[in-house]
Picture (spheres, rainbow, N blue to C red):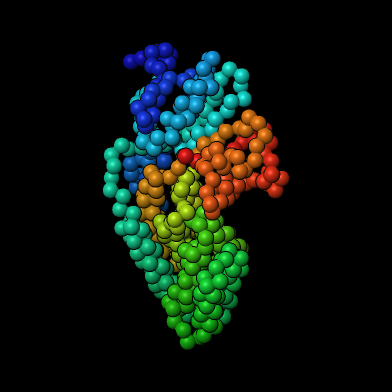
Length: 411
């Protein structure tokens, strides 16, 4: 078996881009990360958690590529063009062997006089082309969200069969907190009117002593879910969900009791399941770039993990402690199914998304020239707007962008 020194000496780094061309630049940095597909199961009469670990997701790698020599500028430009081909790369690496990958981001640096440096993040992919049954997956996640919400309402009614004044106050404060966050985020007047109608209904049911707890919780779920499913882009929706999660924690976990923890579990699980559904219902403008796909996957995963951590930190130490809080098994199972289905399918959107690229300006420029350079100009100025927003240009930069400024573009 060869040692690492022999591997470095005998195995050359070779990158075959999607167009079939091969490149052998110098390289440094060899970082690899891996995430496993996992599911967690809790049982009422068993202490601890059973964690099922499935197969790993594709590994992600960070690598720095260096083109040197008198023709490094021309070679770098040719590599840039080849990298635009949407087909996967095949890389032979001294440490990793042969891997098939898709580039997520490519940052180009020509500040050195005798070399061009590319910092590349790549994601290992499978080459088999599976049917992209997105609509079926979207429908499954939406159905799972509905099942989770119904389990939430049933769980609430079984654990709190009667709403005393203090519980009604807590529920009213929860709805009020959601209203404050969501009202700032919802821009459409028609969506805002529907949301306010949902809020009014929930408040009316909370105040009505004749209403069944299950109907009260269903109304509260509608208030929590609605903004996450209608606000702007997927990124906007997931950011609203994050703000709502923080608000729910501040209302219900300040001085946690068994009752407030039951309410938090109900509100939190409905919110997290709405995130999973929101990430699977993109608008036409969503998932255009691969980093947006990664953002959505991370937001859904982190939101779910934070929710589970809070439940874990506050549950009773013994499963037969009837005065302590124990998460509802049916709610947990249905929520886990929704999250797993969502994360398994969001990744597919990356196949049609664009790569993020970056350069450092070699001379002063302006948004119009750079938009024309990277995208071309259009009659509606959509490309210009996209360029300005994706680079977060300041007001002075709308007129002049200085030399050395890092510019993002997508191919």
